[in-house]
Length: 130
Image (cartoon, rainbow, N blue to C red):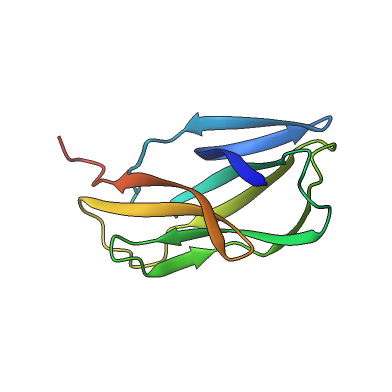
């Protein structure tokens, strides 16, 4: 069995000496008209001791409220047999140009072998809403 044990959105991240630091954990996105609105998605996959060590394919999807996929990450090869360290993936996204800002939701999904293992939702809000 393989699980997605973390699915976190952040404004950005940096890696130093094999350690990842996430900056500005997000529970909503407030687009800025002056520049692109970008964010990163951090995921962590772990396998139990009974997981096979076969290659699996992982990716991150960003979908709208109707389930239409707006963006997706590259596909990553994941090998987990339960005795190794967890596998982490960080994917960067920019809101599509012309994205309609308002009270909307984006669904972020961690997908492994075409099966959604974890998902979270983030609200898109107008920067000046009260």
